[in-house]
Length: 139
Image (cartoon, rainbow, N blue to C red):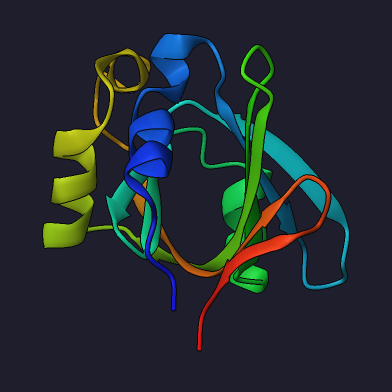
């Protein structure tokens, strides 16, 4: 069962302000890897992450082809490093998109003044430390 800790929620939701944007790793259907910084990563709820996808380039293309993703959070000064493995879904409209946009950090929304972005939700399947130790895993 996945249940983000209070520390995880707090650190994820303040990552950009703290200067430690999350990285989102995706891969094409052919397995070509890609990694992108996403300053809008947030804890959507206790088992799901979300981010505002404003760039709409290769990361979004990859998620459409292959929904398996990993989100990497690293706070170097505190030596906290987590990987959140999961399956992404894209919400181009509707209430989920609106909620993610409403909760998105202002700095990311400012880079999308016309609000053309989409919401991406990631249902977490496993949380690991940098060492590979599994902290939590879905049933």
